[in-house]
Every structure is written in C-alpha cells, then in structure tokens.
Length: 470
Image (cartoon, rainbow, N blue to C red; front, top):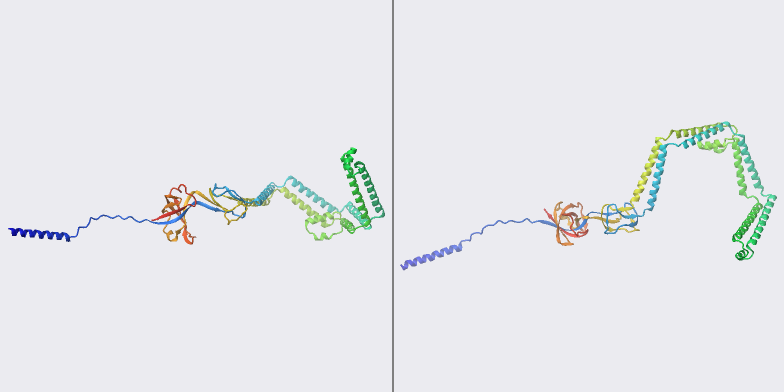
C-alpha cells in the first residue's frame, strides 16, 4: 500500500514538473491590436513682411520749375484733388493772359467775317471809286494852268532863298542885328532897375521887403523879368554872331536841295519824265506816278491807262464789299479761332501743371522738396499713401520658395507691434519680377488681412508671415 502511494506521489510530482516546464516554454499570447491614425504634416513658408498701403505713390511734376510753396507736412491727411505743392508760375500766367487776348481777337475777327461789311465800309469803297474816277477824268483832261503856276512859284521862291544863303548877311542885316542887341540890353537895364526898386539893393532883401511892406510875389516877378531880359540879350548876340560869320555850307546845301525839289515839281508839271517812272511796275506806284504827272501838258496814254486800272480796282473792291462775307473768309477766321483756343488750352494746361495735386485721399508719408529747390519730372516731390487699406508686403521671399506659393493660400501673421495676437491673411498677388535686396534675389508677395488690418496697425510695421502650402 505504501508502495502504491509512493508511486502515485512520484507520478503527481512528475506531472506537475512537466506542466510547469510547458508553461515556461510556451510564448505569451500577442497583445490585442489597436488602429493607429496619423495626422498629415502641414508645410509652411516663413517670410518677413511689412505693412504698406494698398494704394501709394511717389508724386512728381510733369515739368521743371522752382518750388514756390509746400502746403503739407509729413503725416497730414489730404483729400483727392487737394493742392500739395506749387511751383513759381508768374511767367505762365502772363502766357495765359496773352492767349486769352488772342482768342478774343480771333473771335472778333470771326464775328466780323460772318457779319460782312458795314454800311461805313461800303461808303468808303464808293468814295474810293469816285476818287479814282475823278483821277481818271483829270488824266484824260490834261494838266491845269494853275498847277504849273504853283510849281513855278515854288521854284522861284526856292531860288531866291538859295541866292540869299550864298551871299550871306548884308551890311543892313548886320546893323539890324546890332540894334537888336542894343534894344535887348536897354530892356535888361530897365528890368534890373525895376527889380532894385522893388526888392532893394541890399543883400538882405527879405528885411527890406518887410520894412517897405512890399509883397514877396512882386519881388519874384521883377527878378523873373530880369532873367528873361538877360536871355534876350544872349539870343540877340548869338544872332549877330551868326550873321557876321557868313553862310554855313549845310545851310546852303539845304536850300539847294529845296531848289532841286522845286525844279523836279516844275518838270513834273510840265511833262518831264522821271527815272523812277521807268523802274516801278506795281499798280500802287503807278497810282503815285499818275498823281505826280497830273499836271503834265497833254494827257499821255499811260496816265489814262493807270487811272483806268485804279477805277477798275476801286469798283472791284466796292463790289466785294457789297457782296457780303465769303465762305472762305469765314473758314479762315474759324481756323484762327480754333488755333487761338488750342494755344489757350495749352497755356492753361502748362499753368495747371505748376500745382501738384493729390490723385487720391490719403496720408503724406514724406515731403521730399522744399521751397526754393528745383523740381523735375525725375525728382519726386512727396510720397502719399491710402492708409485706410493696409496690406502685407513680403521682403525676403527667396526664389526657391516663390514657386510653392499661389494666390489664395492662407497665412498666419504675427506683428512685432502686437506680440500677443495672431492674425489671418490670404495671398492676393505675386510679383512676376524679382528684385535685389541685401544681395539676395527675392520676390514680393502681397497678402490681405481677413476682415481688414487690425486695430493699431500702422504703415511700415514689421510682421512674420507663415504661408501655408497646400
């Protein structure tokens, strides 16, 4: 019995050992499987940016000039059309006034061309016809005796004057001149005596007048008479000296010229030809020839012909005056008005360009010119920006990153001036051309804030922008 129990115990121990060995050598069961969800990684491009107005401009004049006055300062808010800077414009204002006068003259001439001749113009033309007809009748009738007599009398008078000029003063002329001197001296002495009687002989004339009760005006009048008499003596002495010196060559030449002129007039009245008649061929000079030969003996065919032409010319002018305005004349006058108005418009435009005006409402960022400085189209006068709409402009976007960015991508914005806040923005425009900045090739990308620029944002503030790539 004991032996059986021993055997059973051994069997139980062996079985327990086998079971334990199997437990130790059997691998543990795998753990239960769970589903793993991975989040996609968002890529971004980080760039530096600066706030700037969506609309800004560096304003310059179209022409050159000197700055007269600057009407704004940096930081001023201006309205569209407001004058910001003025150039000196006095000379251009004179040009405008001249152009305005030119327009008025051209308009008056156009009005006159449209109205046609006045009754006075027709009357003048009719009178010219009558004068021309009278000259023709005179040319046909021949010279008058009285014309020849007048010309001959003028020649005789000129010859007499020439003979007198050549001979010089006679003894009687000299004696007359000497007596004139004596007479002038006597009048001077009489005036001096009258002055002394009124004003006194002492040097203190004022006390003498007060003592005698004589008005100062009487003394002044007496002195004036003395001065006039002294001048008369001098004139008489000069006249005597001139006669005593004999005739001067220039006086003789002057009288001789008068004689030659009188002789020419006599020859013209008697029918003598003049060289100028052969040289001049215009109708106007022929008219003068006809008048000069009006006193010729016997009417010549050429005189009648010239007078006939003048009559026809006057009649044609009269007919033109009565016919009224011509379309060609009106067209020319209208063209002159258009030319004058164009000149006026050009002058006004040049004057207007001396004022630099704001093209839009905004804030003045910089004033770059001061009074007295020279302005040119290449020299900006000031910088203006519309700060109501601020946007972001990148400053260091590399060429390796710009290809990853497209319009519409969103971005996270952190402003240096507002460190505790974050803002959203969207790419609205990408520059197609690169720029050099601090030795690097960069591109500019513009972004607009969602809902507009934040409160407190100002032009020029720096920002860090993280553009999210899709």
